Amino acid sequence: MRYLLPALLAATLLATAGWFLPAGAQAKRAVAGASAAATERSAVDLRQGMKLDEVQQLLGKPWRTALTSGPSSAPSLRWTYTWGSSASAAERNLNIDFAAKAPEEWSVSGWSWSTY
Image 1 (cartoon, rainbow, N blue to C red):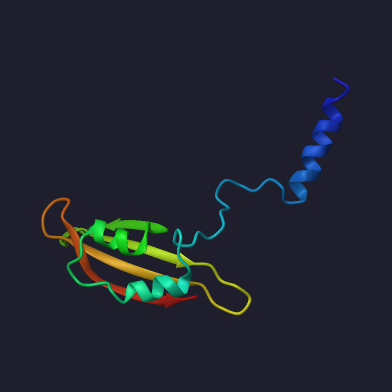
Image 2 (image 1 turned 135 degrees about the vertical axis):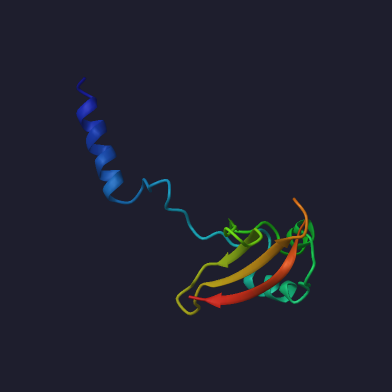
């Protein structure tokens, strides 16, 4: 019982110092094994009609994925690759859009770069 108060005090101090981060606070994840410049060079090889596994082999796993479907439109899939910002460069995103010609047969329909 006498160790409980010091333990709570230590946990409070660590929490206020930033040692414990909330579960949602994750650092930006770069594409595994590649620098932003190397992946930008690889992105030149993107082609319309490429399959999911071909894109993943070219660029690695995406940072985010999103699936959308409107009431009258076909479903679409978006993969987002993100490179973190530094003091001199802004955050860069590569968005790759996929369309399904048949169930589970996704192919690249377009892509775009954005900077924040």
